[in-house]
Length: 332
Image 1 (cartoon, rainbow, N blue to C red):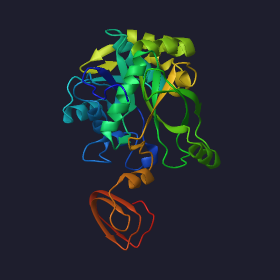
Image 2 (cartoon, rainbow, N blue to C red):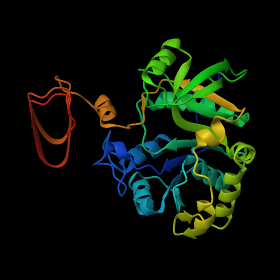
Image 3 (cartoon, rainbow, N blue to C red):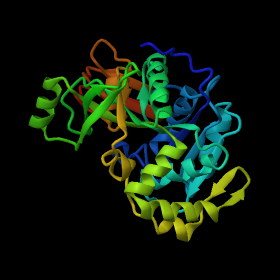
Image 4 (spheres, helix red, strand yellow):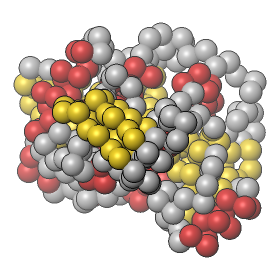
C-alpha cells in the first residue's frame, strides 16, 4: 500500500450501531441484554472491544446509536472501557441501519460535513487490529475522494449466512481499494461454493467508511423519504444528560431499510477494501466455538466447567459448575 497505515492524522469519527438483539445466541443474548453487552470473546464486552479498536490518536470520540431501552447499558460500557466523550444517540423505534447511520451523519455534519465516519456493528470480532487499521487508512483515503467504502473479508468457507461483494477494478491512485462490481444476496450453498471458488468475491462485513456529506447526498438521491424523516427527527431532537433523543414521531415515519439496500447497492460510488483481519459477525454458537481456545479434544470451555469424554463441544457457564460427560458436537 502506498499510503501510510498511521491513523494519527485522520480524525475518523467512529459510529457504533448497537441495535441488534443477537437472537441466534439465545438464551445468553436476549432483547433486554443483547450479545454486544456480553464478554463473549474476551474479558471485555463486544461493544467495548469495538469501541477500543477505534480509540487513540486519529479517532474522535464515538457516537453509539442504540435503542432507548439500552441507553444506560451503552453509556456504562463506554465508561468502564475508559472512553471519554462518547455520545449516545437513541432510536425511539427500530428502523434498521440506514436511518440510524444517517442520524449520526446529520449530527456530525452540523459541525463538520467533511468528517469521515467509520460505521461498524457493535458485536463483531476482529482478530488482527493492526491489519484492520491498515485497511481503514486506505478506506479513509477513498472516502475523502467521495466514495462509500465497505470492507470485504477474504472468505474462509462457502458461507451462506453472509452477503458477498464482487470486487471490480482497482481504484486509480488509491492502493488497496477496488470498485464494487456488484453486491450479492446471501446465497444458497452451491452458489456460495462457486463464488468462493471464483476468487473475485468477498464476504460483506457490514462496515462502511464515508464522509458525512457523501452519505447525506447519496441518501438524498436514492432514499429521499428516509432523509426527510431522519432530518426532521434530528432537527427536533432533545438532549438528556449524555443522550441525544431523536424525535419519536419523525423517526418512526422513516422507512425500515438497511444501509445496504438504501445506498450501497444503488450508488455509483461504492468501493471495497479487500481485507484479511480475522473477522466474524459472531452470529451463532458455532462461530463462538470457532473463535474460542480449544483443548486437545476440540472443546471450548468458558467459566466453571468440567469436561469428561467430551469432543468438539462449546460449554459456557456464567454461574454454577457445569459438568459435561460424553457429549460430542454440542453447545451447553
